[in-house]
Length: 380
Ligand code: HEM
Image 1 (cartoon, rainbow, N blue to C red):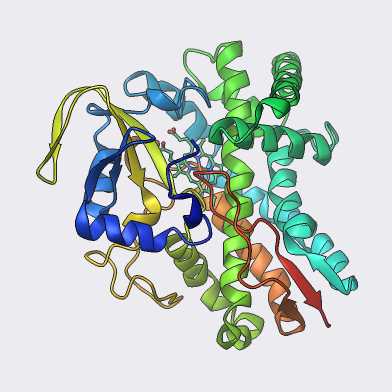
Image 2 (image 1 turned 90 degrees about the vertical axis):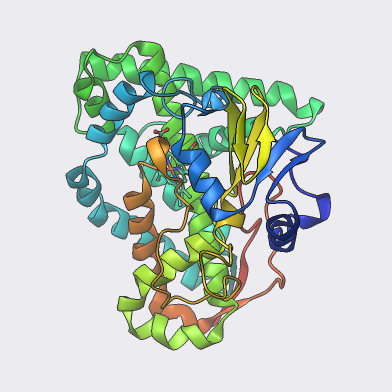
């Protein structure tokens, strides 16, 4: 989905959003030939009205859950919700803490490091490997390559020279997932994939289970990488937060929530209109592509006071970083937990970390937003 933003706004898309909210909150932009929805109330309405705004436009990523509409979506969602039970997520915390502490100890030993390469990429990938029950399966390097391939395929960022490699990576994941599902059907294990197969009624088909395994990698890795990265950018750019970070863990949940509002890892969601509809006084015909700008909704001055100020003590809640409505994120509790554990582990060392690149370069693969790299000097 290249071409959604003016090319110079990857670094900071928020002034572009503010202009849309002010001047044209429901506006067709060509290219890419899509309706941009920028105000909080309208974005929430789009996401909560699947009978008008269909998710089937996202079937390329997964046609059964993410790219599906009720009522078919409801059966699959029930299975995934059961597999992501609070007990299953809570049981992961010790293991996530162990992995995080190991990564943090290694990076503290270096004099200089890229927090993206050393922490925010490997941690969520290792957690996805835990979910799939393949800790000793494909290397993190393979999971990372596949996850990158999904990001490039989703954003249209691959150039023709890279397409062959992309197709090879997508096929390699498919082969891995087919084997994984067959193995779990033969020998159930204590993991989310086994629960997925067990919890659905009627049972998930092989193509459904393979697609949902891919969705876990797509939905669970780069998004969380960018939440962790955006939180670390917000902290490293604000020395006034460092004392609290080092000594007062009670600020972590507010800090994570404010990061999600201020700089959401997923900047927009796509829908297709099934019928004509009027939104904020503008008529949108049937069959049109609609872009619900989460990043803009979270900065809407009609919903949040002083929306451009980063304030971890903000009490307003209700930001749209995890979406809302029938497709609201099923991994939100897990992502928040990963972020909290990272802050707990890195917090005591925060005074010794200094950002080397300012402004921090941002990824150019929409709809994602996060640091492209996060180089720091380590003096602890
Ligand atoms: C900070 C990290 C994350 C962010 C910002 C995020 C964001 C989102 C958003 C915005 C949606 C809604 C999609 C839509 O309405 O079309 C979504 C759906 C979903 N997310 Fe997340 N997500 C994150 C982490 C995770 C994790 C860790 C997992 C699981 C491992 C996960 C699993 C899912 C699934 C399965 C869906 C599809 C739900 C459905 O279609 O019914 N997410 N996520």
